[in-house]
Image (cartoon, rainbow, N blue to C red; front, side, top):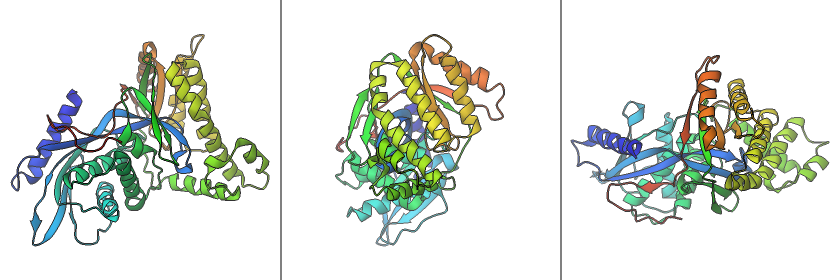
Length: 407
C-alpha cells in the first residue's frame, strides 16, 4: 500500500501548508477509487445494466472540523494537484457555481447534502489523488464520492454509501453540467476486491461478480484528453431520450432488439444507430459477467470486440488513436489459436483509455504492444499498467475504523 501511504502523506502535508497555522493536523482520511467499465458503455443513463469495477487509483481527502466566524460556517478546501488552488464556501448562504470544475464538484456535493435535509458542518479539506484526469477512469466521480463521504462523517450524517453515490451524481449533473448516469459513482462507492459490480442502473441494486483469478486487468491510456461537458456526451444522451420517446418507452433499457428493428422505418437514422448500440450493449453485459467469472477469454474477446465496434460505428464516440490502440492490442492477443483476452474502448469516449482483460500470462504482451508497437508511430505516446480490482470508498485513517454503513 505504498501508493496509498504516499497519497495520505501528500494530503497531510497539503493540509498543513494550507491550514497549519490555523488548526491542528488532520486526523481523518478518506479515499474513493476511480473505476474502469468492463462492459455496458453509455448504458447507465439509459437505465440499463453495467459491469464496472473499482481500480487501485483513488482520490484521498484529509479533513478536520473548521471554525465558525461571526456566526458563519465555512467549507475551506485546497486542491493539492491543482497548484494548491483553494475554495471557500459559506454554508449559511446560497451556494453559487464557480468557473472551476473541482470547486463545482465540491459545491455540488454540499448543496446535494443540504437539499436532503442534512446539516453540513464547517470543515477544512485537503484533496489529492492519482486517478488520471480526463482519461475515462472517473476521476470526477472519485472526487465527488470521497468528498461526500468525508463531509458525511464529519457532519455525523447517517447515510449509506449508495446514497452518497447519488449525492455525487447530483453534484456532477447539477454543478458540473455533465448529465451522467449513476454507474461511475456507484462503482467508486461500492466496488469490491477482485470483483466487478453488476449494477442495475434503474433500481440501484448491485451485486459483486467474482472475476477469475486467472485473469488480469490492463488499462492503456492513449494520452488523448477530452472534456465531457464540451464533448458530445450530453448530445448522445439527448439522442437516446429522443429515441426512447419515439418508441414510447421510459428508457432504451425497455426497448427490445425486435421492437427496434420493427420501428426503425420512420426513425431518424442517427437515432436508430444510437438506440442500436444501447440495446445491443445491454445484451452483452450478462454474458460478459459469466465469461469473466469463468475466465473464458474467447468469449471476452468476442464480446469486447462487438462492444468496441458498436461504440465506433453506432455511437461514434471513439477517435482514431483509440481505434488504433485497440487494434494493436487485439492483434497481440489473437496471434495464437485461442484469443488470450479482449480489448475495447472504456469510458465516455472521445479519447481516454482502453481496457483489456487477459490471461495473466498475457499481461506483458499487452504492455509490450502498447509501449513498443503502438508508441513507435504515435504522436502522443500511450502508457499501460496492470490494475487491481479493489473495494469502494472508505475511511483510511490510520488505526481508525469507519463508523459509516457499508451498503
